[in-house]
Length: 324
Ligand code: A3P
Image (cartoon, helix red, strand yellow):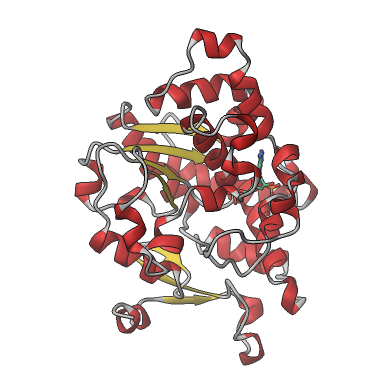
């Protein structure tokens, strides 16, 4: 509530298709620009502001940081299963009965956006948390806290297509589809959750170059093409490397298997949409699982659209050593 008045003073963007008053209730129709990034003004933006004001990372914390629709659900599952492999081995894993977003809570939506701040003071160490907040918006104390940041991003064309499908899926209650062109125009302007994507990626890329021990930078495509290698890197980075014995016993393979797209999607909790904690999602858990493929954009974007999105990304990343 404290931030509501201030949020009303921020620059606003309403997606073209949803400008009429009949569309007032559509989710993801209106965005506000805060510190050069775009967010929805309901729970997300107040949650971000409250997190900036109150979240105090511990040196032992591990924060999963992502733009939206880049494989956050998968990364949460992999990190959670890896960290908890001794406490919750095999069938005892919470991941089999809870959506990964319930196992790894998000700062701005689940914790600071829902007045559940006290949750942060209890629980195990290391705390595994997540956020979509761009690192340019991190208070300096977060970066110097000693806490570790695991970043995942994805080809911008697949990220956009995944976002467009997600928004349409969670609006299925109102049976409305955002025209692809309107969503694309907004995305190119950087208007989407925690956008512009290129600035989000650029910020964490630089942070990983400055502080590689504290910021692990990963891409969805690389994680897909050799998940085992990247899972080992992740485990090392989180301070819990797989032992030779564990590798011999197939512990790593079991985690890969449990967290695969097919395994997670087919779990009852992820396909019947039942929320298993008090975090109320306004959509079913199945919205987090669509195709899980690399390059699906080709089925939706014209070559001209693809070129424009590539150019926008390239302009920002030029000379950075990073490309998609
Ligand atoms: P698609 O829409 O391209 O299928 P996020 O978790 O950040 O919301 O990202 C969602 C994207 O990750 C979706 O992409 C989804 O299908 C994909 N995804 C979810 N779980 C996955 C998994 N276990 N392995 C690979 N991709 C996964």
